Image 1 (cartoon, rainbow, N blue to C red):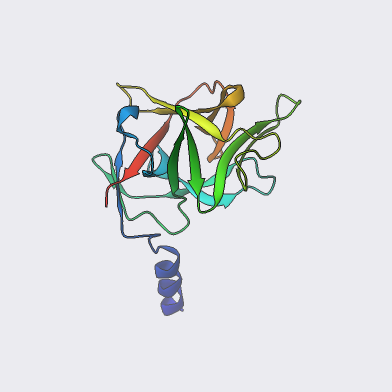
Image 2 (image 1 turned 135 degrees about the horizontal axis):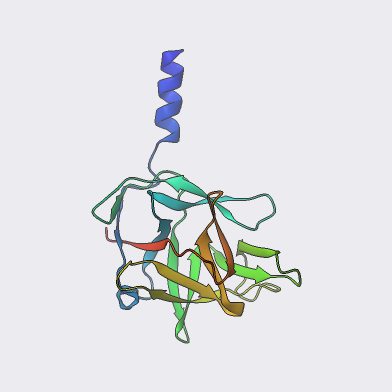
Length: 172
């Protein structure tokens, strides 16, 4: 029984890749082609697992030290930045991160979509970083921003009251 437990512990604790990610403290550090992960306080990072209704992404734990994340766990989602007209596409594999708001004020979606022009989704974002806290604002059209909800999961909404999102850039 102990062997099975240890095997499962090792299996589900496997890093997604042998990589190091440094906290981005200024948006000018971001360049076309950079690989990033989206994180937050308490060593949380965005995972590739979406909620059933496609409105959010669940969190994954990570290990960080001095604003560096080492070998994030399997399931952590990486995005490649692609510059377009002063904005950014966040691309994972062959999909684009997009935000969508419906006519209902409560219905907001943060999802991976197959096309940058997916119906109703905004896939270009602006990125700014507060110089004192290093919290990032990733804002899509219609002012939808990525934030960490109390659940905890990464969602989007207009002008979230708490700003705890951070961007970590791959340095390996």
